[in-house]
Figure 1 (cartoon, chains in turn brown, red):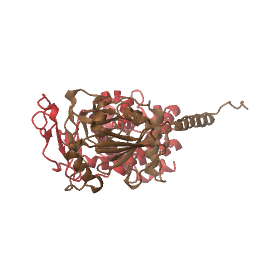
Figure 2 (cartoon, each protein chain N blue to C red):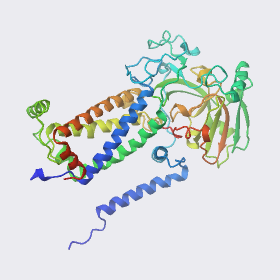
Figure 3 (cartoon, rainbow over the protein chains, first blue to last red):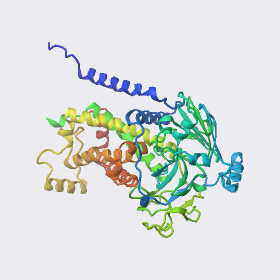
Length: 257
Length: 257
């Protein structure tokens, strides 16, 4: 009888798979998986998120374009939160937005709350005094279309540092004047191209595109880049944001794909 | 004798898991396409730019729900590639006023879940196929087999519907080998690569994908062309299974006798 090999093919395969699985799981120390609610589609989304966070190099920059590449750009979703005639109108903040717009957004403030040492508010002028970043990037809508525009704003990471973000902070939630809310993890929040944009194509950010200030998350598809920002909330634990969040409305929380 | 050879168990298993993944991908892909049934070339393409191809497949096809296009203030007057819906030669913006068909919430999640199924099954199949010799023995035409006369004769036979009866195993004809090999080694890998090119997180890490396919919209258009060719393949494949003995073929690919 031939001697039993030290490692059979089956054992080698199993050992390899276990090691790969272990390597995958060990990556979990830097992120938490979003909840799946036992929903098989949300499990697939969680797998994609885990694979991206484990296998992709962190915070690679998306491609930036030249001014000649700037394209026409549709405005979709809420195009004016203050217009009571539109079906997207929400009185909770819509009337306030209309007042702010009438005053040229001079009284607009971005509130930052939660796990920061110095919660407070920032005016448009405050944000414009911070270091600016201008980037010409591609907006990719989940619907399938794309558009290239130049965005000017302050890196979100800088604003978070200015507010004294606490070491335990893991997520940033955004609340808007059109009553939308969503959040991103700290890897995307501190990405150098994740900015609070107040300028578009060299001018002020137009209202249909989210003026006075919108979020740009260039590593995810368009619906994560919320328009008409009102409030930022920094927190330690994952929050699906209930009935207002993307997950309860049937959308993947992570949209890097 | 060769004729007694049957489909190996791992070939049968990967065939059906792969088939289920491809069907789920083809269906969810069509649902996603319905949200924006226009195809473009390059990196930017949307309702305000000219399309390469408009597919009349949902109520979003050429909908007129747009406000009058306006130019972006600061980039007026620059020389630009003009499109039929652009104002003069400058990029424009318009607000959408029409509620589109959009089932992308579950469509995208199902698409990416099935994509995991295809990638995992495909990797096992390719690994198993190369290691077991299945690819060399059955999928790649033998030396001297791929000649113009042989190809012409097989083509003529198929067009006259003179189909050889099923062997119940991997003894494939020349056209069969060509069809299977182009699906396994060309169409499916290209579909996966063009799909990955539509992920902003992946192209941030691997920008060569954008260069390879000439932009995200080109990748989307190629992805659609591959979808169409794979749907044609499945139709032809099922037709050939039926013509060569449906019950015999299905038994050979399931229970394996």
